[in-house]
Length: 218
Image (tube, rainbow, N blue to C red):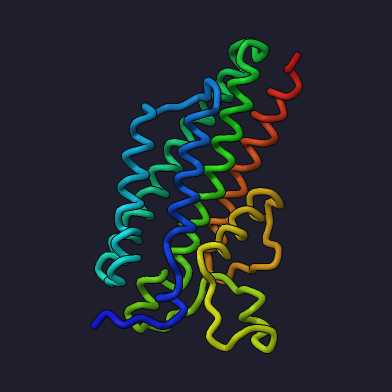
């Protein structure tokens, strides 16, 4: 049987799918941003991620939810490796070449990395927390990796409240801007490591690359 709790069944996948499409559109219009992989790779990866989301929305099948989780985990690992290469490339441009010649490229690249950073880690948080939607769909009750204020104060929310993707998008945005937990607290070591990694990528992008590019703009 593939019956799922109401909180999981009522979560459509349009929000994460739309976020992925927004990032693809951003990458397409940004001028001359630094990239390690060809542009078509990003479109293939997006298609691979979105297809399981569509199937899950249409069928509510737990097998496809596990496939969705595995694909997002692979996406996260590939993103971290690609971003490390892109940041190294941009830092090399700053230190080895006159940055005045690449100011626009550095700014657009910084924006692309920052937005993709927020999205990717939001997807990871969504799938990691308590085993992700597939764990809830299987009827398991694992311990959460993050403590949301609604769970800490159940008297102010509905008794069947569960965090959805938009809650993790908010968590990812706060982590990338504040570089620290805000209203959502990490409970496990893997949650803390993921947040620390996202903050590090955001800090390097904003402080080293974007700030340097702004300084050399005419």
